[in-house]
Length: 299
Image (cartoon, rainbow, N blue to C red):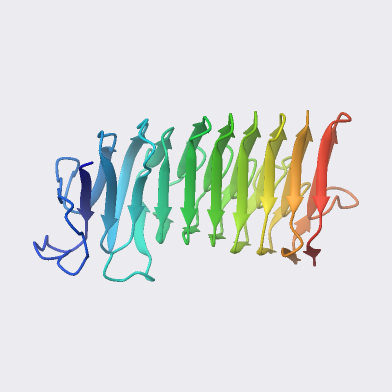
């Protein structure tokens, strides 16, 4: 199958920028049709091919970027292939800039930042609605810095359903704010699965509405086999909200929560503003049918 590549950079276009990448016999297409400038993302990547977008150093996003491909291979956004451990930057420079996702997607080693003068009005720089047994969303080794919204989910607003799976791995959320769900808002339904793994850190994330919950994460889990799983290490540092200053979970109708025995959940100086305090990790379970397995360590 034909595999396509795009390149975005703040520097002048260099024809040999990928010369050290082992591409085997694949055909390379550097498609600039989607560029407003050599350093700006826009449009979509819904071609019928496998698709990888290399962010060579830094690029910007000022309008909705749609991913709705039905291809099983994910649309991939990743860093400079010549620097595997260094994050590349996607800066949101307009309140209308965000990723609108309903197709399989992968974000790897990206540092998402928000311009100082911009407040995202959509809820989540990544706004994803993934469904179906082959549906996947992977966000790996990414940072989300300073995202603020007047709706839900300062950085991520996710709906994972119908046996789809989302993986949030080795992420940093810093200074994210929203009316509800300071950093991450997620709905898991109809057999959807979300896994939070490796080292995920939420620092100074908060809700801005006085009666709202979920300073770091707000999750709604419902339906048979719908599950939120925490693995490895998750840290909430100086997060705040009315209830569930770190995590707020609403569970019903066979929803499942698992904190695996290898997981360490740390809550450091988190502030619950409700009278009397209602905890840094708040679970509201409605009805008789739900499953909670807390096997890891909570500090």
